[in-house]
Length: 467
Ligand code: SAH
Ligand code: SF4
Ligand code: F3S
Image 1 (cartoon, protein in one colour):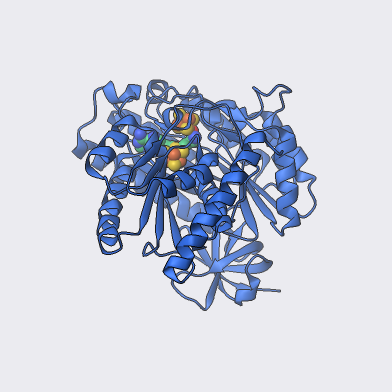
Image 2 (cartoon, protein in one colour):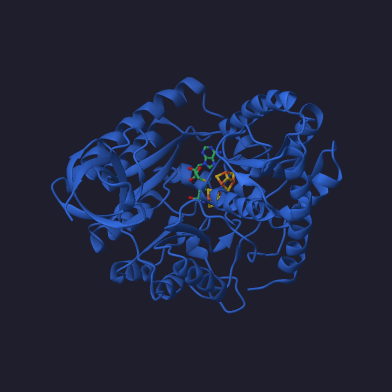
């Protein structure tokens, strides 16, 4: 949908083009820029939007931070995400010392925290531009301000917004697959989580806008879409014409050219039977469900404000396994939430063993200032460490036997890239999200291939191509 704001921002893109072309003349080459993304798929998608503008205004996008303009799109979900950003900023400072013309911008979730902005204002004066999660669509306007106010730190962070502006240029990282935002923000306020504070209230895009975007992606050669939201199961409930997530999936299924549909993340509290039905009948929805557990203990789940019990989670996961036997179920688990006892850990381990997760991201609880759990009594570090190791070991054991059960089968994979460690191998992704490495040609990238799964190495396979 064309928006008034979109048209306004295109005006700033034109203006920014003249600044970049002046810079190009001065440098005698195209100015370069690098966008480094921290955090989740939402941030990755936001970075594609930022790259879209940068490339439109005339920057050459490169992977190295030895660039004329470096942007960090930050995450603040756990403290170590923040620490990494501060560490990397130190490195940028010395780069900028050598190249004073260099520009540095920060954006993303961390910027939504007032304490972070205070710290940056005080100790990181070399940063040129800071903006938040709600005004990314204003990036071209901010870019112009940056060039018009050389030497000043520009800060523009909004508390919240109702605006959805999606009609701006985007540069996709992969030609054959793309994330698609279906909703923004989160209303769930899990007591440990900072996301609702930094991403604002839940807002769904209309199904018409989403379908239009996916049709356009399909016409550009995209075969796989990942529908993105913090809790896709509550998609559409607050739209003027409410629609369920399952119904949205039915409509996406009908789009020609799209061969695979994925989505993230599904909150267990409102995963409907309708969704299971749609997944079961679908030819395109991938056989993978990411269903964050967080804890297997009903008491801890209550303290986390997750709105389900251990039994409800188990019933749901086992029902899904029964209805869709070839599905893989992955999860997120937090160890060390305030008040967690040995009994609570036993409960989590019990759920892992019963559901047999295909993969689980296990996190040590991290205190986020301003969230309710930050004020609760914390578990001592050495106990958390010990519990973390127990949980991790269980996850690794179940995942190994679960993932390995397809050994010997021939499956369809979407070939994604050259293997990171061995360039004679290609890496493809099965419908159930498991990766397969196999000898193959680089021309296969973006294509579907039939691959025999020969050897399982824990979370992935080695195989050979059959077609
Ligand atoms: N919306 C998704 C999760 C988004 S955050 C959902 O509700 O499932 C991704 C993961 O980070 C969460 O699932 C959780 O496991 C983890 N996480 C969030 N806050 C955390 C914290 N304070 N400490 C440790 N892990 C956290
Ligand atoms: Fe955070 Fe909970 Fe919202 Fe997920 S559902 S983003 S864990 S508050
Ligand atoms: Fe991090 Fe923000 Fe995503 S806090 S996990 S980048 S929504």
